[in-house]
Image 1 (cartoon, rainbow, N blue to C red):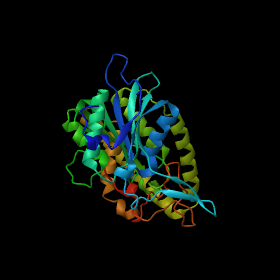
Image 2: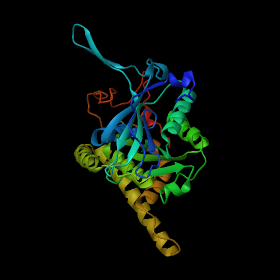
Image 3: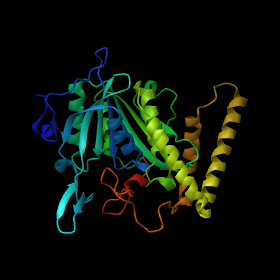
Image 4: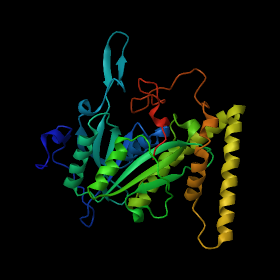
Length: 347
């Protein structure tokens, strides 16, 4: 790493000796970045990254200096008080690990808190790490709230600088201007540096965007496997999703207002899917679209009507925002400003 400048070097500390990350044919590893914060509806990105670290062989590669990257006043760390004294604090972490998939193929995972500061230096440091480890492909994970029912599978939209890497995955297909994130900047800068980049955005029912939603995490990892060839575990997330859906169904059944909204979303979704399938059958020129493609096009339509369902909340009646999860953030994902970061729709 002699080519690094002192400024870049100060952002992280490499483990020594570092783990081997070359593939079976000596090819470079995939780098997956999963930054919590801006586009992490349903905490799907955080849940996916945590699941990968816990389910696969995992070795620490680098630890980033959050004092240089995080604005603690906008995202205040949770501190523990015993009743007499402060006895611990959960500081944000940003790390890179080397993992091995179910087939023994190594890859890199960058996860933790999205940097608030020094984005350009951060992306330059990641680019240097990608060069150091001979990274072959870069994939970013995101999740966004959409006007879709929880009773239908989570769709995933793909984007990136190499259409062949995305295969038949549905795309956004429209020009737009939107607030950026460190994850988006990573995709842009690494693409400019010559790396093949992919972004995956899972869809979370907007009325569950502040609750853990493992179904979207499972969808992200399944899509990640398709675009990279990695063999990743998803069964535990799918089982957790089934339990969440059961709990949500029980709560929805007891709330006529929410039940009406969910029923309307189901009817709109199913009607659109049926009409789309009929049009494709009548055209006879193309294969039937996948469920993800249908869902993506429908979700773009529904996004225009998301305001009709604002204010629907499935949290308990106490008004609490939820206990902190394993990341140390409460389920609202709110910073001091009170704006839940996961509520911002972005690729």
